[in-house]
Length: 144
Image 1 (tube, rainbow, N blue to C red):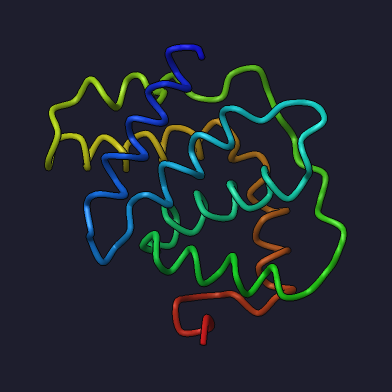
Image 2 (spheres, rainbow, N blue to C red):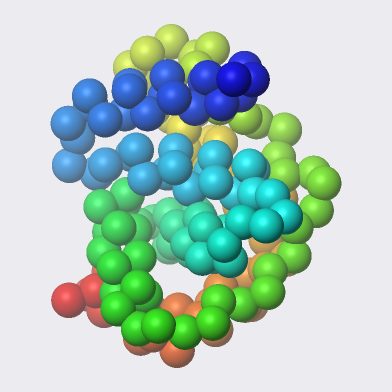
């Protein structure tokens, strides 16, 4: 296992033990999935990761609200959009995040990481917004 994957697993243990209502674990999963995307992955992996990052960074959704959006998107079978992937997927990685002290500092670093990864993939913004609009996901009130 490489250092980044090991750091991701460490972050998963850290965020799952958090017990916070906002569920920042979702942001860890989304940021890692986007950075770790590879040829041959199912398109839903990157799509859901970018949906989560977009909703968190640009719309202020919590991890729990992102989960609800994922559930709403997943109710309807459909082909997932083609998304652009560049070599640069953000300078901050899971390994960077685990270097921050556990607690408020690391929690804030998770949000900074999510923003960094979203910025690296932001050329997909219009595609993600179109997908969300097609599914009636415009704000947290549309998740009901």
